Length: 296
Image (cartoon, rainbow, N blue to C red):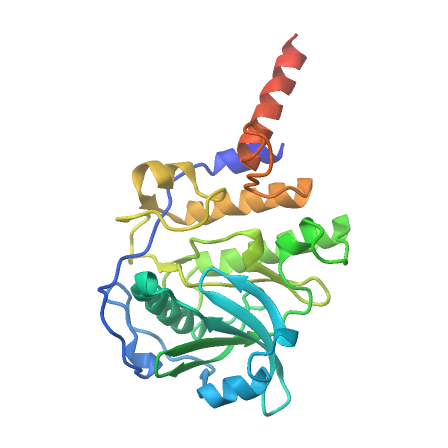
């Protein structure tokens, strides 16, 4: 049963350290090394650095026509670079109260994605750190994110073959992160969820949004965190109870995504009744009733 797979990975989880609330001036990406990370290996491809004007030109001054969606730290627009390449541009809009978090996530995203290379991870084309403006430029994914397809927000329907293809692609991406990948040590994504799985026109899955990612300390199986970060509905119970982040935290979240693929339900839906809001708990309840009926 799906829940059996999920619960078998009901283990520890890891988190990311909290940086100081420093006012960040633009520095070369190579100088963004976090204190808890090992030295960066040479990147195969150098990310492009854009200006604010280039971002405005690419999006027609952030026209609503090019607006794709809104996330936790900003709005995403479809854009076209000078070379004709179509891209997705995240314009970071960081509240003053969360400025330090936003700056840290921006650095982590650029630093990690610029050093990774896998067909099931979204590619970072470049970034813009012009004054107080922050932008991330990604490859454009024609079919948006997985959750929109599962919840009927977009017209394109996903058959079972497509769902299996997405599950396998996402699993390969996670396996790459959890191996030594291109960084030399395992990486925990820490915010793996259906909205962070982007789909190409052929429904190839690519993992995105690495702002909460954490490089595992060398030789350690878990990492004790000072606060729990991620998304409700995907939290590994052991991570929330102990504060210890592990690779299995991502695997638990992957199990939740599998349940979403199987049921078409959201991991957390507050519009449902009290017993049906959390997908994992709902499936657990259904399995409990089923076992009781079988014994009867």
